[in-house]
Length: 347
Ligand SMILES: NC(=O)c1ccc[n+]([C@@H]2O[C@H](COP(=O)([O-])OP(=O)(O)OC[C@H]3O[C@@H](n4cnc5c(N)ncnc54)[C@H](OP(=O)(O)O)[C@@H]3O)[C@@H](O)[C@H]2O)c1
Image (cartoon, rainbow, N blue to C red; front, side, top):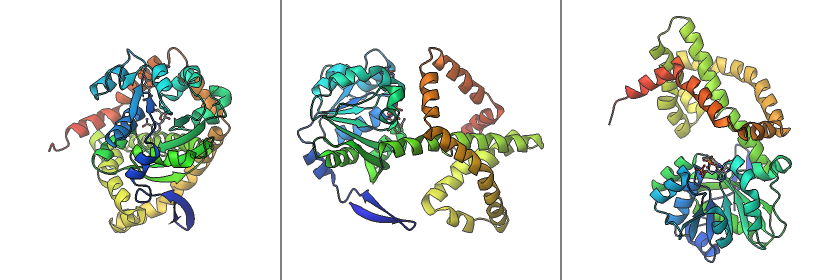
């Protein structure tokens, strides 16, 4: 592992160059890897592993849309596409990539197939960390590991096809075989990670739940709505308000920040923008800090997990979700967004 200095803090990370694909394939040459679940993360990881030359099968309940998607992606019914129980039975590595609620429901099927020395792999620490709510307690005589790509399964696949990768965290919860770390890294390289950084199951889940509720989705959408509302209430047109709030951010600024960092962005803007943004940055930070602190506390207490499990298991959850999404979709902000997207120059 390489030690890299991240802003003055040294961390152990694994780079692709030090753990080449050939080594990963050698480590797992005798393994059958079953990817259980073919939702968002399942296809990305399964197809990347397959294209990288690993021995992969998919385990998926029959009859749903994921089954059809797996068939469309070239998995062969009865050979490389099986029902969950059969796939787990055949596999030495079980990659548990059902939705977090699906993982709770299917745990008994998985548990029955976890014979001595197998590897149980997660891409989220949720099930194991919140075992009191999920009931997911793996047996002691297996390896329990995690590789969590820090991005959507869709991007994992897209970047893989471009020869790039998404950074992933990795963690070992149980090392029964004594080889858990090497096997985890091999899986991490196999699914198409950029670099891999070490964490533990609990830290992974706390940072992930905070991030998605925070800046990645919850805070971001909330800030969009607030700024759009203020601009509209002062007579700005939807087109002006949307362009100043969302379009410029996603189309112009964020790719530049991704390439060059925030200081570069400030340096390469007008003095008017620079001076104002630098001064207002601290006000937004101070206003947001207490909200982020309470968010982290809610997540760390387990209350967020409890709420998500309770809500997600209600029979009318999907229906209610559709109502919420419809409200967003039909709001003026996102209707304006749709119109703006349609007006983007076509290639
Ligand atoms: N989304 C991401 O890109 C992402 C990123 C990083 C980590 N992760 C983690 O990766 C794991 C998978 O996430 P995901 O987003 O890919 O999940 P997802 O898209 O919600 O996956 C749903 C899959 O689970 C199956 N499923 C749902 N409920 C089930 C049940 N009760 N019994 C059997 N199968 C059931 C679905 O099959 P049907 O089609 O038949 O319903 C589908 O194949 C999670 O632990 C997640 O936290 C996800």
